Length: 444
Ligand code: AMP
Image (tube, protein in one colour):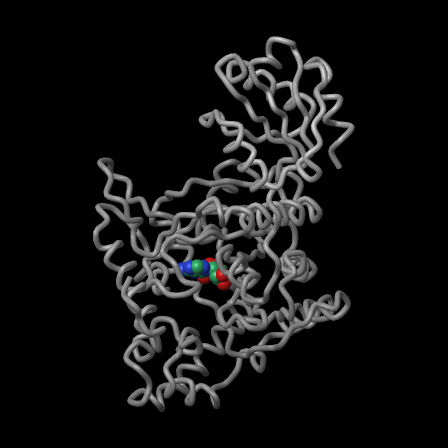
């Protein structure tokens, strides 16, 4: 065995992993990941907590197709947003439909709401989802091409600020239940059609003075979507932004009091927030409240959302407007944040009993015996492919079970079974007909 220095060893290992990968005939698509069994306890925990929070705040689960007409995102999310302009996966299909893998869910939910006449149900309607989304991004930490989102939406009814607060609260509680610490909500208001139009003009006037200094993307945004200038990560643009007019100074009376009231609810609930005058979010349909949620030690947002009272109209709601507010959290990011903050791994459901079977007659009985335990709600593990006592006991020990049940030819013949206490090694033979009862007495 050749000796390597520590660095060299690390390098060798990396190279061999890379070589192994290169030699694979197939790999998962770039930016899309398998969620292996070892990761599933984190996902189970996330699904469970999301479901509990949704149930508590009376959100009903909705599942919409992974494919939607591309047009709903073009009209809804916005043709000038990065998501639609650069990140949508289109599907080449035989029919005439132009379909896209959904990059987000809000337009799909509104589509379902209109299609199924959900306005007939009592309003507002509270909906929640957990599912996969797709964006053609350059993969990096916290940014994938397939990722999962947990979303909450409140549709219909009034545009009451209490719903904005309730959406933020549901997200905050979910994150808190996952034991992610030091979470803060960044919040802003984007106003309504009226006050935002005035603000957009002010913003354009301001940035025009710097049109030869801002980046190429921002120069384009200046005419098509000036609010997005506030989002730019370019250092020079950030510097110019620091003196740009802010939306809060241009809110009309109604928007100002709506925003103030959202903040008052958050104060009453002790949900920590900071005002961020530059927060606009990447989607076109937001009005009034927008927010993002961040956690200590994790430098990308866990999720965000806002109010979108105009989206219904944009997607075909007739006659009345559709007040709405919603959010989405990134599942991978929540799990990454839990790990980074040292949250202990959720425990798997472990079995307390291992069935050891030796010889053909015992193997034949094994499945039926396990069914008897299933009816009693006791989980049993086994290794039906192995037939040596030693190897099966070794496995039982590795699984950390309390009891092993040993079934050999003699036991089958005598209609009995051996119960072995794995800690003490003590064994006792009991009648087969009483085994479930006897095990129940012994497990803790
Ligand atoms: P958005 O739908 O853009 O408002 O994003 C809401 C949340 O979804 C983000 O804060 C992330 O947690 C998550 N998210 C968005 N895009 C990605 C991505 N490409 N990879 C992983 N998570 C994402």
